[in-house]
Length: 191
Image (cartoon, rainbow, N blue to C red):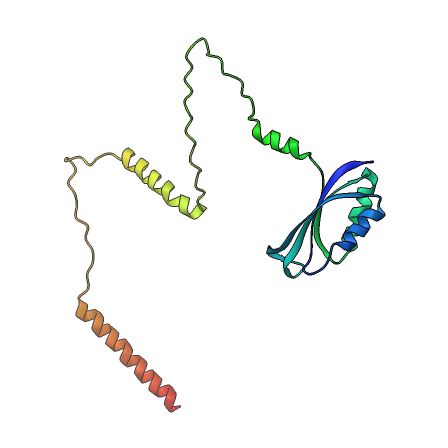
């Protein structure tokens, strides 16, 4: 006949897999073992459903008929999801899991070789240009302070003279200005 395949499919709750069996038999597939896993709760909604019946069928079919079976199953509204894979013999599955992979024995090297792990460089933090500018200014200030000569004792420090006005004079000037403004305002209002 052909190759052996396995189809696992979900159908809507309460429906029978008769339509699937018809599709397989119409494409000259010989159905073997059938397994009904019953109603299963889905991890997420599929086509608005939260639960579906899960089945697995083993069948033999020609390679060319698998494409036709897939097309027909996509059109059936009862089938929610399906997966067709080539069957691996059960005995091969069990043996492959039991056998541990053979490792090549390592041969001792002539000399000692130390392998030191290289430290991973820390990722550079990207700063905005505005944040980088203050760093540059501090570097420039450091450079200018290093270049500037230290004051010598030969030069006397001269006090800086600043002009100071008496506080009362400033307040009186402010009052005068306010009084003048009040008079001008009254004159405008009266007009």
